[in-house]
Image (tube, chains in turn orange, red):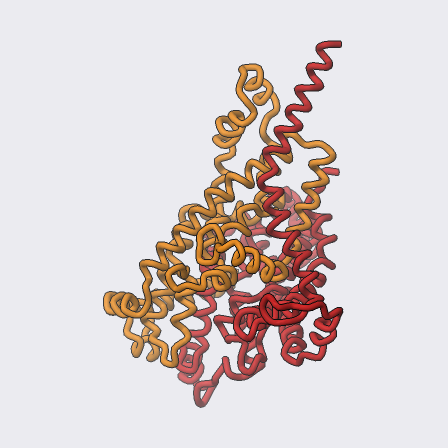
Length: 260
Length: 297
């Protein structure tokens, strides 16, 4: 059993270990199968910077992902809270219709979305990037589930104290649901950082490109410089890896979050 | 009397507050999901390049089934679906039930390592696997050095092996992800059930099939639907791992739709018809999702 787990763990980790090794070695050494971290890291950095505008792509990716995460959490948690705390028949029906949207594949809305964004003049903009995924059925469902455990007595007490409904949300719901927000944050940030099809469609200008797009660009040449390529992959993976290691439990909760 | 009417207005006020709270989220989903969906349906009955489109009835749908590349992309997508999803789910289930064992040591480390591939972006892992399986990649190097192969095998330029590499990559990326669902599902099962089974003399295999699988049924159903949904929309891997090649032998439906809309001379109507077919395929499973998704009523 331990042997089996070790083999599976090895397979899981090896490609990532190989990536780190490749990022610090010369391409020729990578091809010859060198499997220990090397000293060519700075050269790879230099080559990569000369080849692609990594700083700009990183900046874009962070900008899009952070703005999307903040707005998305606010809009979705407000909606989930609204659906649960004030729920009645009509709202439950609307919620069920929203859940249907979960089944709409992104590619089925891709072309009209592109036309809408491009007509509005939002190609190559942050708003164009974030608009389709600010509100997702998954997050609304997740916050709706967590609002179910928000004690009604506390709300009543707050109302008697004269707190307005919106302040109850900001001052009482948000702080108590910190773990749900952490889970929602990891999942939204990761999805935003990793998204590829949508930015590929709307970021027509190289100034607006994201990190995954730059990684994909690097594979287009005839000769692959593995050191440089894997360095780019490493840079693209690091932010999500850091989120993963710091908030592993929140992330696990995030992906399974709405299911409970 | 006046008290009850005051209560009425208060609850009406709260009712309104609820609508105000959920309005931004609900409207965004309406305009970013349902409206485009209807537009895609309308578009699928039109033909023409760019904005100059005319109605053309169902000719896009007819053309679709005479399009060899599209047929190939459907075959590929279902090949990935039928082979990869069951293997992945069974594997994830086995791993989860091993890791659920209370007496297991280093549980946290194993869990983290198996879950780790989820931290990589889809483009990043596609590029890693493309490099691992390249002609001069490490897989070929190992196989040649072990004497299994005489010379490097070009995995990505042969149709079958290119598809299999995509499946291997998908297994690597998503098994841990599904395992996490099962682990969280297993935590809801009383551990004493397992201990009782042990006392009754059930072996590991019996426990797996008689306890774990039946009790996790809703979770298994859910992961199956999610994986199916995801596989039908596969894009990043097809683009970055094999570039759909060789000669469209590993292209997925979403990849072909992208090519038709944004790479070749854009034919939005035809591409929309294809995307609507994916929607229908996914919608067949929507009913199941609703059943496990929300159980208040």
